Length: 236
Image 1 (cartoon, rainbow, N blue to C red):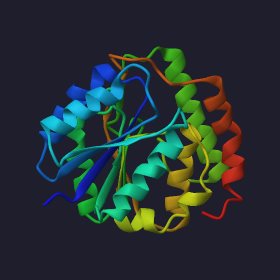
Image 2 (cartoon, rainbow, N blue to C red; image 1 turned 180 degrees about the horizontal axis):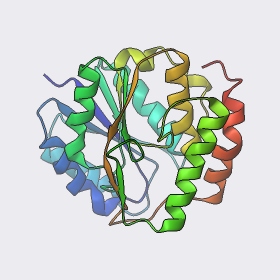
Image 3 (cartoon, rainbow, N blue to C red; image 1 turned 90 degrees about the vertical axis):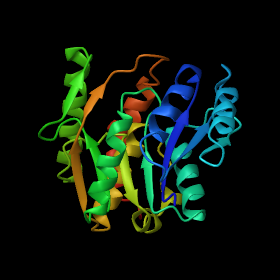
């Protein structure tokens, strides 16, 4: 019986849909896959529908009216998952920067008693491949900044590869979280810790994308920079 949903937001990810669908679903019969697409103009939704035909009852689509942001895409996916009683709910990218073979490792960490398992680049054993030093340096100090401001002992606070227990998401005030980029990832971890749930970082090897384009922008960076101060006052 399927008890696990992997949520993948997409915008212009046509090249990755067939590959990532197969790579995830082959891992175990308990896995389902939900794409949340922000009206991609490149035909991404057509590729998702092809995957839905190839894997009936295992691949699903939420199609949205425009580019509304990563955070709102995940929240739409979380609500969809909770309505359908999935027990383990993942965040994951479509570009293979997160290895589908690690899905079951994160799920097992939750089965071992944790409420949130984070695929971490910066805990012991974690690695990054194909990043220039300048990008690694920016990411490293961004995480140091977050730990300093929020007082959370998470080494990879901006990580986007995560597995939640159902009860964890049920106890977070998702409706008040309006961040769209990396700030969303930080805020979700902060909310889990504030609710005193158990969090564990699982070492992964993070690989830079092969197909498609990065969605990073100066606006996303600024949102995270100033958003951490806002999080401290939010009723999460």
